[in-house]
Image (cartoon, rainbow, N blue to C red; front, side):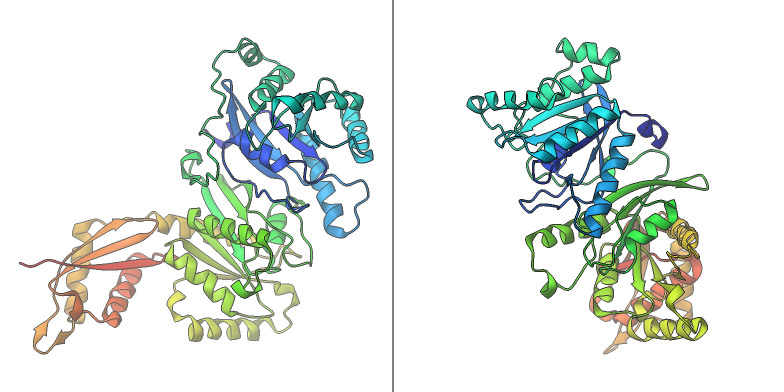
Length: 471
């Protein structure tokens, strides 16, 4: 499915008070365990998008933060702005309430606001886990938004009836099939499994989508970078560390290329992770790195390369993901030439293994060089897909051996019999040798440098594996 086709899908927004089960319902409808679900209020903050297919009809579904009548802080106020942006975009709205609780003042205020939007609104009485509780939905007729639908998102009760009602509310020929019970599986496309955290690779579009994970420590400027690229407040930005809690997918097109930008939660040291929700956030961030084509590692230029930054870069290298290093908050640096040299020296001294990684200085405030990051991303993504023909690679190996013979130990000479590239993402080269123990890591580094000199591989970690073969 192309990006343009996906954007034409009807949009269903899920809204309601905090902790009524919006994210659980989102996961149930989309068929993937993507949004973080937790008993703590306020876990969802940004708009979180997914796709779903029910009764032969496809939708974009957006999960939103909990609606508050009187936001008390900056983050809460920005959450409400994100909710309103989702409601304005939506073609239909699912107003989720706690079916086992009484109607609150906030529920009434939200219902009145939704009526003024003039869009189809379905009241979803959630947490009604069995048939004996279904009658509790009748109380929500008082909201004046039509027939409340009893569901239990946790136990998958009533979700099929809900999606049938969504199709009816949106109208069109697909709705008639849904009402007649045609093409009913009771499960959205992709299958719904508890705890499902399957890879998203199969859902990528065919039009060369580049998946970019924006990673770094808390408050490094990851969300600000997304907003600077889009020139809008797409994700919440605050000086409070840990504002972003989930991995937020943002679709973006620039100069004819399509990107999926993944804004991630900041990765702090393990000792600093105290709340259970932070463990979920870290898990989603690490998954975003594994699934990315390219990781843009954001590092605060005023602080330099911290130990946690090194761990993040090291993890991306272990996964074989392309890397771009972005020094952020460049507008706060006074002597820019001197600071740039200092940062270059720090990297070369403390992480010489990433000399192949492109680096760029940016300011999210002034938007200075934010698009230069995408230029680097494009080159790195192309390098990640690069394959070297076996014959050409072996000609390079002959030249490498001619310049510097493999080492020997106690009269036993190391020999490279032949070489081949076995994969991309990660980029892996296999050398068939006589004895692996004869090859020192320094000689493998020499071979890696020769590969980079000959073929580039900008920003791409290279793995060199040795296999013994006797002749």
